[in-house]
Length: 243
Image 1 (tube, helix red, strand yellow):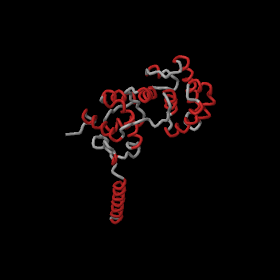
Image 2 (tube, one colour):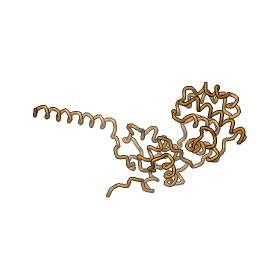
Image 3 (cartoon, one colour):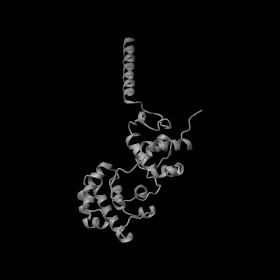
Image 4 (cartoon, one colour):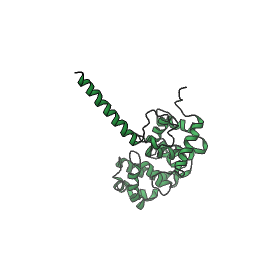
């Protein structure tokens, strides 16, 4: 019998239980102090690494960790602190604009509604979901490149777009696992199920995963490569001998 391309309900339960056992207390790797600094950090993280964002925001948040202080710092002031991050000019504009909007419309407080959050400059659905999950404990799942890859590779939530994957994840993820699902999946994709060479030999969910091209451990990879190289040499020698 052919194996199903998508995980069953029982397999999905086992998948999350396995990831939870590996990381009992998953958290974002972005450094923040409160919902406002989290919004800023996540907005800055687009097309940038968490490590790079943290390096910049440590300096930025030391002088501006509220919407009022950020607005007082000004666009050029923000830009000076985040020049090491990609798209820093546009991001500086967005940080100032969202700070102003928070003050003018929300009393300086970060909204807890996704639709309202996405009205803030530089805040898309993914950013809003991260903030709602991390800062307010809502069971949202923000689909970035890592979660998109893991969801499709494993058969957990196949989809052609991030929104499609998010919809499937929301439907198939048991309620008990929804709060931590975002972090478990993103960290798994970042450190184990990486894009080019997934480390399948140390994956906690490899027995469930539908990925066809699973990689063996490095020692086995080296042996197989050497064997293939030796076989190629023998074939070349045989062809040469035949003239």
